[in-house]
Image 1 (tube, helix red, strand yellow):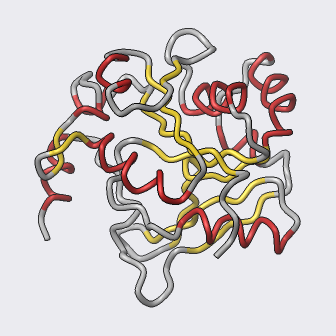
Image 2: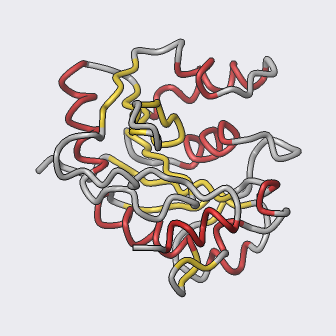
Image 3: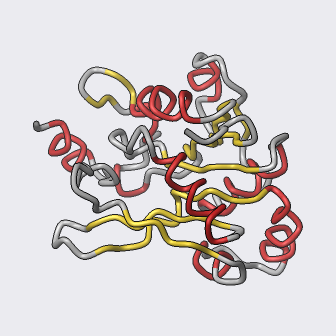
Length: 203
């Protein structure tokens, strides 16, 4: 096991939920509990502390007993706004991000990202997971990032940059595949619509 004390976890729950009809995704029920509950329960054992990035219903997220921070950028600027908020508040050398709408992500995810980051002397470790057609696809919202990249992200977003891939592409990034024997093929399936959420509930 790696030492997780230098890693803070950030749950990204700041989106508009447009494809779900504008609802707050993290508060939608999945098998009887809000999606955010699964994110907190699965991430907390893997890191030294958890924060949530949310832009509405802050009291509901604060009920999880972790710090809740709205975007530091205006107008729902996307996941990188969450990254920026998390890096500004992070007090450990590393930050790991997960979205609030992927309730089955692996319990060894952070360990595998951290191992790969150290082995490759990378600045960012990013999940790559199988799509429904079996092909691997990078999942940039599942990232382990060095806190020292904050200045780079400030420059990028100040210049109008909003695309995660464009920013991570500026740094030494290792892509970590999660398609090994025993890996759940649905581990990184995110529910963008309520129908997809119901589908994911099926065993």
